[in-house]
Image (tube, rainbow, N blue to C red; front, side, top):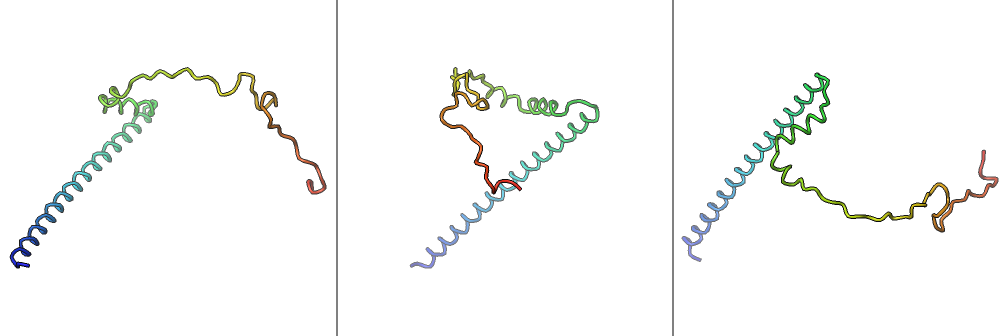
Length: 119
C-alpha cells in the first residue's frame, strides 16, 4: 500500500461525505420552508373560518371554495366524471331480515328457559 494513494483515497472520501452532508442540509432547509408554508396556510384558513363564523356564514362551505381557488389546476385535471356500471342487487327484492322470510336457513330462536335464567 502506497501512503500517498491511501491519503488521496481518504481525501476523496472526506470530500464525498462533505458533499453528501451539504446536500442533506439543503434538503432539510427546503423541508422546513415547506412546513412553514403549510403552517401559514393552515393559519390563514383558520382565520378565514373564524371570520366567516363571526359573520354568520357557513364556514365549511367557505373552506371548500377557498381550497378550490388555491388549486384550480389540480382539481380540474382529476375531476373526470366516471359512470357507474349497472350493478345487480346482492339479494332479491323480497328479502327482509326482520320478517324472517326469504332469509335462507338461518333463523333465530330464543334460548330455553331454565332455573338459571332469572333472578
